[in-house]
Image (cartoon, rainbow, N blue to C red; front, top):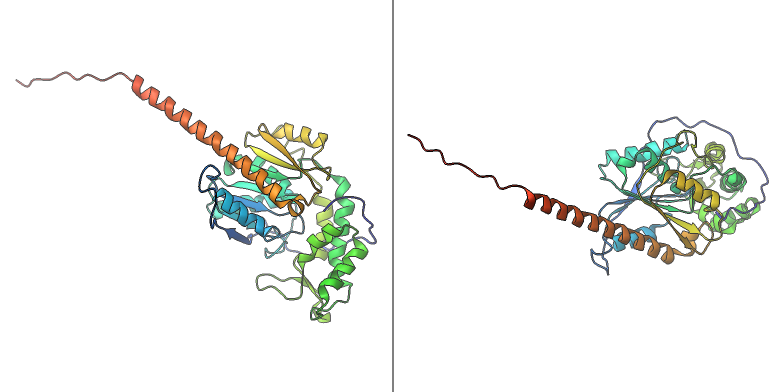
Amino acid sequence: MIFNSLSIKRLSSTSTSLPFKKHAKLNFDLYSPQHSTYGKLPYHCQEPIIFLHGIYGYSKSFNSDYQQLSNLLHTPIYSVDMRCHGETENCLPFTYDALAGDLDNFVITHNIKKPSLIGFSLGAKLAMLAILKSPHLYTSGVIVDNVPLKQPRIKPNLTAFGNALRDSVFKSGVKRNDPSWISKSFNVMKDVCSDMPANFYLLHNIQPKPSYLKKYSTEESENSLFCKVPIRELSSHVVENVPDWPEEDLAGVKTDVPILVVKASTSGFVNEDGVAALEKHFLDFTIVEVAGTHLVMKERPQEYISAVGRWFYQQNCKKAAALTKAKKTNDQKITQQPILSYKKIEIA
């Protein structure tokens, strides 16, 4: 996920045999606060949080982070699998509008009151879109290394990622009962994708066992490995739609929902054009820079968690100050109201 120049040996499949669904039922993991050295205040977050993974990620991509944040902020964290990812059903379309519809539907059907969103990469774009389209559903957002812009330059990288996964399952000849399947799969990925950190991130999609919740992609007749994502059907949609952004639909759309943008120092995503795009849509945003590549959450987890914790603390202080001010104003109105007098009525 460094998104530098990569060697690409072949094109991905363009198969589109997946069913079309308006809403996918999202699989999720729930992380509840276990303890907090800080107690409930001042870090306590009033609302639950939903975490949105990146492309070819899944609900457990950063599970140690989720538990730490849940403990720190003393709030539950829902980590979801997007459609076609993890244990969520495989279906099309794979567009930002469809993903945002899935997220809104998840919030409504699970009766989650005004959650905040934390999104990484693809999940960061999805979080921004959801907040802009449905600001009444969300309290705030943490946007990890992405901006609301079209990014055609990442298409070669996405092609390489898809090819690496596809070849590991369908062209490697590695069998699911091979004790060296992990190292052999990784070697196949290296032949297609030169981004080593990305390959480690992608490898979690390759499995030697099927799922009880959904059908994994595999060549069953050859006793091959399984892939969590339907890579042959999905890869072309990823290359086409993940770099996209609905600029025309969101022209003039602004929100005062606050967001924190975590900028990875060497990734190049949050550049001057990206900041200008943020200014078009978000009236209240803060940028904090953390040293690292696009996979900054893997490289600098404690720095990222500390930055997120500080920001939620600041948001909580603002809310507390606003509530205190509102209470004082209300008390003043009550004391300024005239005292009603009553005249005694005598009955003859």
